[in-house]
Amino acid sequence: MTRSGLQQDVINLYRQGMRTVMSKPRAARQDFLLHLRYNFHHPPLKRRDYTAIEHRLRKVSRTLEMIGEPSVQRISVGSAVEEWWDAELARFHDDTRDQGGDRRIDSGRETNQTQEVTEEGNPDVTRRGDGSRSADQWGGTLPGHGGT
Image (cartoon, rainbow, N blue to C red):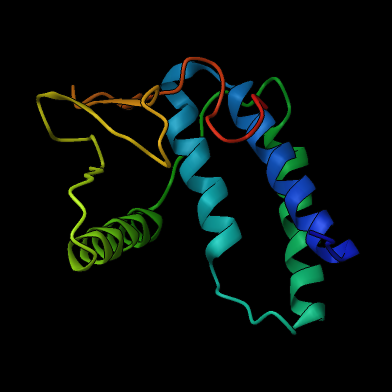
């Protein structure tokens, strides 16, 4: 599939963000990942709004440059980000229920049991619900991202 230059820029910036997240301590990765996802999804932009997309790319690029410094070890996500993520999870649960699926993904912050999560057919992703901030265990690589 042929991508435009802007699409390729967005993909490259997201991959750079994932590499930055994976360079952070394991205990803080969940918050960095949530911050990255939020910045790429909020505010929702229309496909043809090129100037807004370019603006977001510049803004996210500056943010990644700042949090990519080795001295940055933790990041705090606000309640608005957590509410957005909870709404995304609820929307995902509703979509899978409507499709008759039985996949389940929880936030992992308040559960006390370990459960296997299959995302896009990858059984290597384990979500541990031990209440700690490092609920996601990726084993050092992210599934579906070529290990970056």
